[in-house]
Length: 198
Ligand code: DGI
Ligand code: FE
Ligand code: FE
Image (cartoon, rainbow, N blue to C red; front, side, top):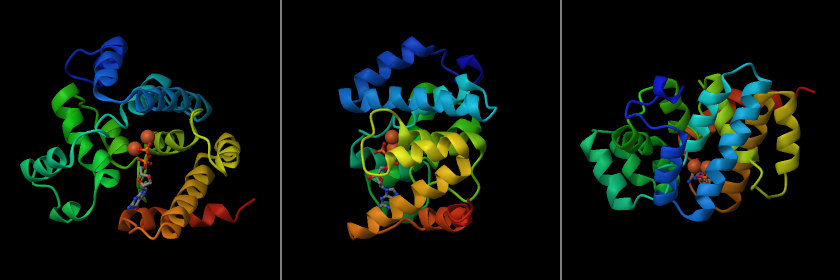
């Protein structure tokens, strides 16, 4: 049950109310979509669906915090000062987990690590981290060129789906001429071999 992972006694309904009050309608629906996709991926990969669903539901909890709040959290917890050179896209996972611990009492380190790395991936992802990373990309509300291929790959292999998602994200970021977080490139290098295997 949620109680194994969260300290403040929230059940799913309690979390849904809190998230609905913290997030735009659209982002709330996205979180519900990631919850559902994460549970499906968990069943396909021999992982606990409830734990995957909880991590998926919470993954963007901090997405609508202000820049000032993120900068204050970086100071408060003595996080890597280089984080200040980035923005919401990088902060809502890597700094967001501190807000999630403060507000929800999430105690499970595997859930926290999965949320921490859900945007950039990591070269050392747990099965749960891969599930959240991929579910974020393929959930039902996502519509972009390539999403169908990502959905198909995810049914075959979580690792191939991670590789595909990372390559396409990097392509997209480079095309937009925005900086790529070094950890994103590390993820790409760790998974690139899965792009070639059939
Ligand atoms: O929060 P979501 O929109 O559901 O998705 P996300 O957390 O995977 O990504 C948020 C944004 O971050 C998305 O527009 C892509 C961008 N992003 C992913 N990796 C990097 C990145 N932005 C920068 N600058 N560098 C990265 O490495
Ligand atoms: Fe996100
Ligand atoms: Fe997301």
